[in-house]
Length: 504
Image (tube, rainbow, N blue to C red; front, side, top):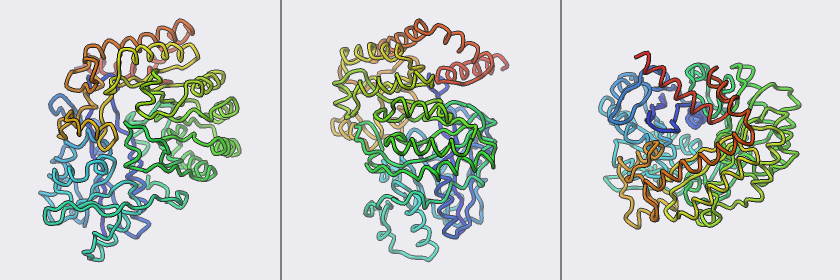
């Protein structure tokens, strides 16, 4: 078959404190490689990169790239099928308009959608847009079998595991497909169908911009069961790691082919087994690569000790993020965040001794949060800053579809699934928290806003008092447009917006 894959634009909120920025679509590149391996003629319509300078205002939001009508015009008229990736639920209202436009122009082309949003809300997606099939969860094997069946003209698609579709208006969900265990057998992402260097030139990178950037996925899945995380429905609770030598080979190949020097890992949690991370670092040392690699998504802290931190520094693993989420032991127990403060502090001290850039994720406004819980987060933020953590990324809780907390809030009538609700994460990051995006039972939006700045203020005031040179280092980085940490990213983005307003 002739298949065109579509990377749609995503919404951004220019008012948000932590704005999203596009990045190379790793999942779509893996699916492209799998379909090409199966003999299909695969192309990619990258709606972001076709017009990266075009920013379209859409109500209170904006999106970068082609508009829906332009995407419909740009679709390959000779394609037999269109595959659309919808990773984030806040992108769905825009993706829905794009899919409708494509289907209106080409009603006979099969439209297949996948990604975390469609996996989490398959029936909602199918009834909201003219999608023929939804690929659920890990996409490579299901996409291969689906397009093989379509090319053969088969009608028994209810026998294909990992699919959802409508049949005469009836929602059909086939049995869950088993996870891919032989992750080393997967083809490398089909980056030749994209333009990685153009993404870097536009500043569209994930994590800290530390040179020509290529994303890496070294492991899949996570064995933990945090109630706010969509991992369980997307990946399941099994952690599969690639051979460390294969990951190092891929990094070396990108270093040679693209001149890449910066490798953000998109793993849910890469550092889970000490033996794996040690072996991976040893592979990098053996190759003598002069690179930077980082863990911006967050990782576990239990096996990070002096030996691991030393190897991270020696191999360029200069930035990593831990995710305690809360300073309250009570909150961590309720959200099933199985992490002890002792393990985290030991890992932080080991990394700080090696002068690694350490970030932490905090979340406020869980449904059961109280003033005592958030005051515990204030105290913990001070403790982390004193120990050597460089950054804190703080967000308001927002319910991700098909997570345990989301289902609880739906059952309680606090959430009615709608496109407006799906935009919640974009407004949750604004400077002042709104009542309509607050799901905390005991604290108002105004109180949460106060605690937001109390935690941030306590952290950064402590950090600058303990290490006063950091304040001047950050000012110098922003003056040069350099990124070394999350605060640099934030301040540089604010500087660019001010310059844009001034030039306008």
